[in-house]
Image 1 (cartoon, helix red, strand yellow):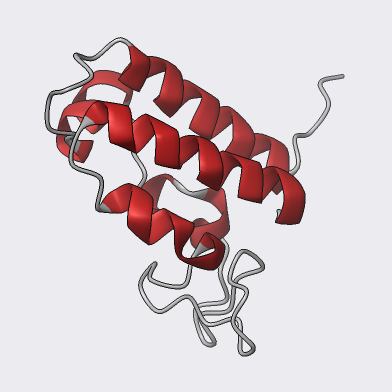
Image 2 (tube, rainbow, N blue to C red):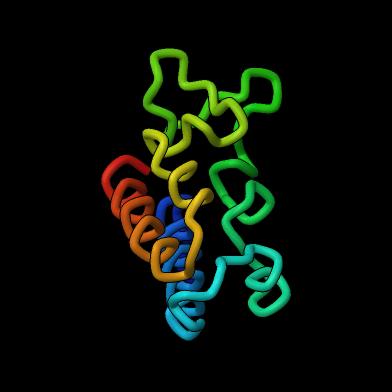
Length: 110
């Protein structure tokens, strides 16, 4: 019987897959979440995140949000604002650096 993965394990695998794909891109090219979605059917938007997918739809609360009320606020509070910084990266090189920080945060708090 196959072991069921935890949310944390799923999220970490998701980041591993995205980071590995991004490493194959020209590091000074502008990052493009749509290009990633086309290539690997995943990106860093909420639609690809196991935590976002299971956030209580009535409260918007998420364990990866460290604000007092735990409300996601469309990603701006996600992973102690690390997700927002990653999302605002300009190049793939910068995106990878910031994605690794998000992954580390998920490893610790997910």
